[in-house]
Image 1 (tube, rainbow, N blue to C red):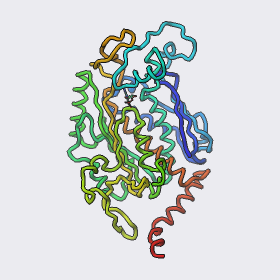
Image 2 (image 1 turned 180 degrees about the vertical axis):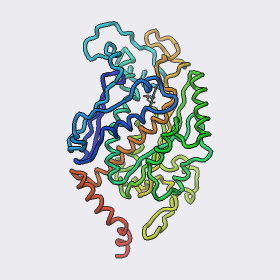
Image 3 (image 1 turned 135 degrees about the vertical axis):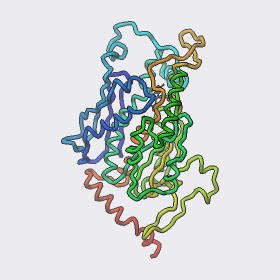
Image 4 (image 1 turned 90 degrees about the vertical axis):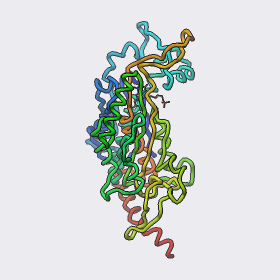
Length: 403
Ligand SMILES: Cc1cc2nc3c(=O)[nH]c(=O)nc-3n(C[C@H](O)[C@H](O)[C@H](O)COP(=O)(O)O)c2cc1C
């Protein structure tokens, strides 16, 4: 069983995460975590903060000479802007008069936060509901990702659309048609899409999206979008159909939906499958050489809550950013009068970053089920268990049925 907790406020001293349950001897380099943290900060249309701060993680425990010890791993990501926030965010006694935030933004956690936690300052709620917390998730997800890489599992993502601007040819079709080169790896998608400021493959689409973001900025508005996350090399057999909480698709839906501003998650062709005939929707079982395979992968690599051995394909939708420079209507909680929502330093678009966070959360979910299935106190033990399983897997069905 692996688990992690994050702590920290958006403008607090630092974010921290404690990660537990990974075996010993897993190689982790600090640069690897920082590489993914940097990716979370990318994208055209981000706010000023992403430009002035570069996140780096400091390893506080659980790793010695770049290898895990099997003990809890703790990571610290300092907020570089902390010194400008000490007065407003100190855990010590309040020493000066701080202006309270009383105007909630529709679409953010401001109103629910002050109501639920009985606050009289929206700052108390903003600080933790901010997506800043996802930096700690990416750090934790990097450990999961590194673990999965040992077993040949590779994760990547791309943005499908921003503000309703889709590519002429959707790469997702290739994924669903199971029409990928043999050496295709999930990470190839990110390698390619990270070159684009909006994380897309198509140059024409990129220009259209950037123009749309410029328009949104000019109007003081924001945009959302959709993205795909793909994991390759996942063996058949992660997850199960026996309980609601052992289903891999349910686990993935939870972890992706938990990302700030994500409002829809689907596996495989998802919503589109609901409009098709069964014959157009399911993946025919065929023989490829000596092994059983599928003509297509519309199920997105999961059937009956269990991985099929084909790439796991996850699609998600992010709503537009809630903070608007031309704000919509709200109520000032101090005066109870109608007013425009509060403006504050903010992203206009964060879909590319959201896809990177999605990669981390998918890595976490897969690692969780992988650790459960293959166990082991050291990575060598896990590898042995995994190899034994793989060796027996291809002939298993044939052997059982020819008895
Ligand atoms: C990478 C990323 C960056 C975000 N940046 C902002 C931002 O700058 N301003 C903002 O209002 N919301 C931003 N959000 C969205 C809010 O965090 C989110 O809407 C809020 O926490 C409320 O949660 P909900 O949208 O899931 O209901 C961002 C989300 C992500 C994933």
